Image (cartoon, rainbow, N blue to C red; front, top):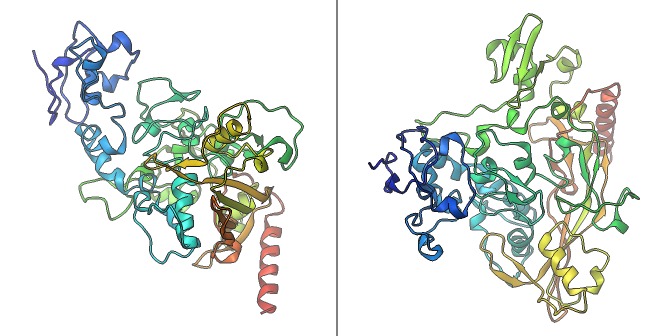
Length: 495
């Protein structure tokens, strides 16, 4: 008997089945099949919602036991963005339709932030629109080469950098399939993405890593600031890190997706078709301000005799504090993290050099670059018993190799009291020197085309930032504000 998935062109006759298919968004039940040629070679146990023929997602030919024949028309990465609309969408149409407009998919905020810092006048809609530039003629073109070949190692089209904690799937699988030690650990899709999936991209001195209280060291042992005498050997994220104070929500057992939910994977706004549900976006106030709680309870929040409680998707549950301190009424034009952030990343003087030279000795003590590709090339070419590899680096979108290696260094790396600034609406908030960047390029003939060209971003490259290092405001929160207001006043007086 043949059973079909709704709208699917492939019969489930090729089911190598193990158990009955659970209906998802219109998929119909599928009977067991007595044999499994795919599973004779591949150990893959799917979750209860995906107990279907391997060929439904991967296609290929399950009737053949010959490898070449079995793999004809095989789709190795069915959840890759190139395949989502034809594979995943068969059962998950709403998610597949909205994903291409999401920030995780387009990366347009990150991409355009950097491009504008180096002279771009108009935004581009997504990372795929970044021009391919082999011989940059302007700082903007140089920054676009930087983005394609050094920065964009983490996006839904990529399986991540080659470190053990940074490998992940592509497309939907980036969040919903679990990896361990750089390998796919299970074919069971997780409806609730785990923090390990989030951290496979949100690591280094960026938002996400701070949620766990992690501060990335400088690169090689000799250059670490603050210096550590510890003997670090395993670098799952490419660079060692200090363990600092983690965010109070993380210490309570909350997951990233408790606050950052479906809005991250949808267009999150008017671009969504009217037939689609608008996702909930939690804010500090929606969970901690009593008047808002009385109007609407966010998901996971329930009333109790003493107030409210919150139940995480991890299963942990705890009392939910509501705002009572008079400071919340006095300082209404102040973001929460101005007072509640325990610390913040403040890396300054980020220097990025594209070198087309085959001179590697200068980098002998800077081989740990936070990029497996650069690190591998340096270690290989500094071993004079090996044949030298050309100074080339891959395009992280197409995979094409092009001349030039992007090296990275810093003037200073620190965790400190958060820096404060003002948003466009006048609100006081935390900022960090995210665009305190300079770019250089020396070609294979030793001609310097660009020499430490700084970003054009205002305010010394400081941009708004939300440290995920939440904790009690403590007794010095007002001092932070007073110091900022005093320095702001002094700056105005000097003009």
